[in-house]
Image (cartoon, rainbow, N blue to C red; front, top):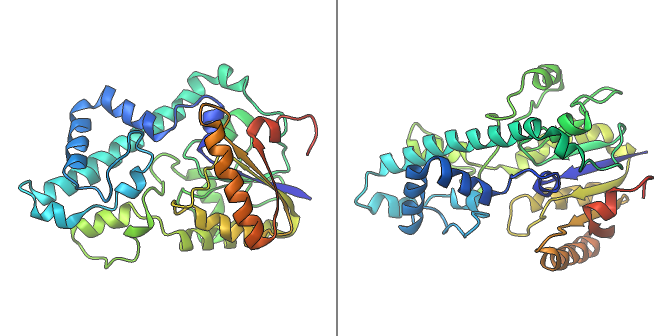
Length: 303
């Protein structure tokens, strides 16, 4: 039997990467201050779907733009939408590229944080935009027994398995990403800038999970007896929660291990994960253990 390990941004943070959206905000402020000022102006005047919080943790939700206010403003609506669409997309990708590069430039330091309890026969779903598993753990995207080893759920992946080799060898981990929110889905597609914006910053969770299931989960379903969730918030208000309900339904007989943060947010996140544990356990009758990433994974043998 094998394990399915689901990694979120907390996994990258555990290894010292500056990959929070608050880090993106600081990076914009330091490197593209004029554009940062524009973003804060748009935020102040209600052009985003919701006000950005201090840490920009809700930035994907905010990209459901308030078109009614934009069109009624004294500013050029096309300029605003185009500015957010083109410049934001370009700079967000540039920031991801810098985070990715930091894995190489800080390789030996990051290597010291490597977890002992990750194995070659594990399978992975990654919510992250980085290639930390490949660069630090030397885990390739293709499994030794064939098929995918790592499924990058927020990178665009091929529906047809025959495209797998081309996907693994030629995919663009920086630009080929899924970033946005479910409110931008299922809109009428036309040539307008608004339609293009919504299509770019959408997150069609049902479609994404259908690809995950057909390409990846269906091939490993009978092999999985343990599932580890490392560094994902499992936020009830985030579209990603849909994935976890579907995974819980599919792997209800597996033993689940869910991590919580071990920093200044320790108690807050621990209580949140206790709530998630109760909800998933009650609904899907799961056997769930929670702990820090280190408690769950940094052992000499499998739990």
